[in-house]
Length: 184
Ligand code: HEC
Ligand code: HEC
Ligand code: HEC
Ligand code: HEC
Ligand code: HEC
Image 1 (cartoon, protein in one colour):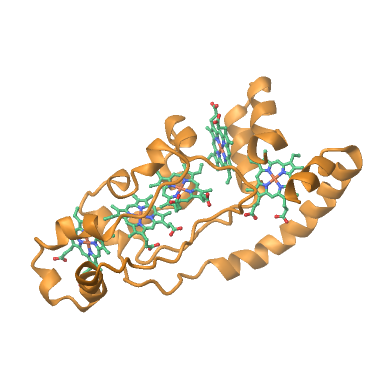
Image 2: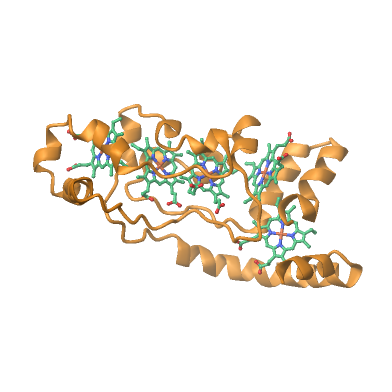
């Protein structure tokens, strides 16, 4: 369905429609920001601020970002590797759900906040390999308690940076703004 829609949109009439859709999306985006900038109810009030503050690297917990499409969320076993050695784990009410999960073997159900639709191809590896920092897209996570999405990952968000990155390199610009680069 989406594939056919995109094929149609690449035709001249479609491109006009895209222009109109952009205007509509632009106004929707403003509304969308107010909707998405709230943190969902997570199973653990996981503080990025505390962990990043201790110098733990993003890639230690999200190693997938350097290897493939998705960054991944750490397993309870990874959390426990540290937390079974941390005194506060014994007494912290915030860590009770983690302890329960480790004992019961029932994984924590994290609610995703940073997402694009299925018909968009996004690959972390390509971006990390090109030297893009996590911060460029996710904001400063060292200040965040429970993750919220500071950006709306709409098409304009991607294209704006792709245009900047390409600069005068026409060949790269064509590649990075081609519909088929992100939709296939
Ligand atoms: C100690 C492990 C740990 C470290 C270090 C860590 N994170 Fe996370 N991250 C998590 C966990 C757990 C979640 C899921 C909970 C949440 O969304 O708040 C998460 C969620 C996220 C999300 C939201 C993903 C989603 O859709 O649910 C982003 C974006 C993110 N982290 C980026 C970063 C960046 C950037 C850094 C480095 C500055 C970092 N993280 C460091 C454990 C970690
Ligand atoms: C590399 C070590 C490390 C890993 C991995 C790690 N943590 Fe932590 N975490 C810490 C340290 C250190 C503290 C601060 C403890 C203190 O204040 O005494 C902490 C604090 C916390 C707190 C705040 C506790 C409180 O009462 O203030 C929560 C909640 C938490 N971690 C959850 C998690 C979860 C969930 C994971 C896995 C997704 C995780 N941590 C992975 C080291 C780690
Ligand atoms: C060029 C922009 C960009 C950069 C750079 C980037 N991300 Fe992401 N990130 C995204 C987008 C877009 C999504 C949503 C992907 C999806 O839904 O398929 C996402 C999703 C995530 C998620 C949640 C879903 C998943 O992939 O598991 C985490 C965690 C995350 N990013 C962490 C990181 C970390 C850590 C870094 C740095 C090492 C990083 N990101 C660098 C754009 C970026
Ligand atoms: C902050 C800048 C930035 C943002 C935001 C960004 N990108 Fe990129 N993107 C890059 C860079 C840099 C490259 C690598 C360019 C090169 O080949 O030298 C790239 C390359 C790509 C490629 C080609 C990857 C390959 O395998 O060659 C795809 C696909 C892509 N981006 C999709 C996306 C999507 C989808 C989004 C939005 C959700 C997005 N990008 C947002 C900077 C960005
Ligand atoms: C750099 C990546 C990228 C390129 C290039 C790109 N798109 Fe997109 N497109 C996206 C993202 C991201 C979204 C938003 C997905 C979401 O809402 O989660 C999107 C959304 C869409 C949608 C759905 C609109 C909606 O309501 O959200 C259509 C249709 C679309 N794109 C068509 C196109 C066409 C046609 C082209 C070529 C002119 C194109 N795209 C080029 C990344 C890209």
